[in-house]
Amino acid sequence: MEQRLMHLVLFSGFLSVILCDSRRLTEYVLIQEYKTWNEARNFCQKNYIDLATVQTDEQWSEINKLRAKYLSDTWIGLYDDVNSWRWSFHDEHLTYARWDKYQPDNYGGDQDCVILHSNGYWRDKGCDLKCVVVCQSDQGPVLVTHPLMSWKQAQHFCRENFIDLYTVKNESENQRLRMMNHNDESCIWIGLFRDSWKWSDQTNTSSSLRWAEKQPDNSFGSEICAAVDEDGWIADELCSEMFFFFCKSPLRVRRQILRLEVKAGDNVADQVTADAVLKEVQKKLREQGMAADVNFSWQEQPNGTVFQKLNKQHYRWTKGEDDIH
Ligand SMILES: [Ca+2]
Ligand SMILES: [Ca+2]
Image (cartoon, rainbow, N blue to C red; front, side, top):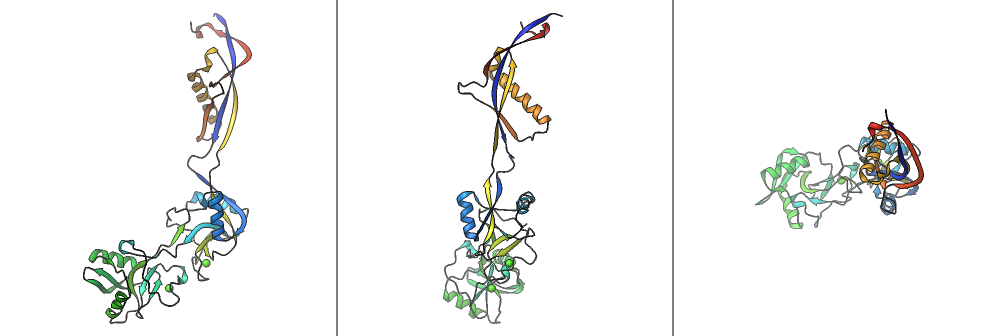
C-alpha cells in the first residue's frame, strides 16, 4: 500500500466550559449573623435576592445540608400577612372597621376570617368554625341561620344564591345587622378575611408548609414570622427574635477555560472543523461521566479566529487511500 507523508500543523484553541444546573436558578446561603426577621429580609434583599423560599423536597434537602453546620432556629422568608384584611365582594380594602376589644388577636395563629358577635363588634376567628351567615342581596343583607357553615362554605353559598358575603361599609349598616340578629347569634360570618402565610419573594404558597407539631400557635400573641427550628420544621416566632438566616442567592455559574491543542491539516481554522472538534470533546468528556448540563463553547481569540497556529510542525505517515486529491 502506498504511504504518503502528511503535513500536520499544531493549533491551539481555548474552550470555555460552563458548569451549572440548568434546572435551578437559585441556591441558598446561610448568613451567620444574628438579626431580626425584618433586618434579615433587608439584608437578603440588598445583598442577594430575598430571604429563602423553601417548598420542594429538593429545596429542603439543600437547606438541611446547610443547616447541618448550624442546628438552631434560622429565619426563612415566610410571614403571616396579618394586615391584608379585605372584603370577599370585589376584594375591597377595609375602610370601616368595628373590631371588638383586643381584636383582631389571631388567637392560636389561625384566625383569618371575621364574625359579627351578638354584642355588635367584630372578632377574627378560624375560618373552619361553623357559623350563621349574612349574605349581600340586591335588597340588602340576608341572614342565613341554617345550616351553619364554615367561612368558605358561606362564601360559596352567598355567591351561588345571592351576590356575595356581606360587606359592612359603615356604622349604620353594622347597626342594621345587629338589629336583624333576633336570636342573639354569637357567630355570624361577614365578608371580611385576610391572607395567611406568604413568602417574602411573593412565590405562591403551596399547601406543603412543613410546620412543626402544634405550629403555628402564635403563643406570644404576635408570632407572624417563620423560622426553621433545630429539627428542620417550621415554627412561627416573634419577628423581634434574633436568629441566623437563609438568603436566596442567584446560582453561581462556574466557568473554566481549557486550552486545547489540535493537530490537523492547514484548514483547521474553519467553523466546520471547530464544531467537529467540539462535538468530539463533549462526547469524550460525557463518556467519562461529565453532567449533561455542562455547556461548551469555543472562545474567540483577539484576531477573531478560534484556533491559533503554533510554530511546531508535525508530519505523519498516512495511507494513500485516505488522501483527498
Ligand atoms: Ca380573635
Ligand atoms: Ca410558635
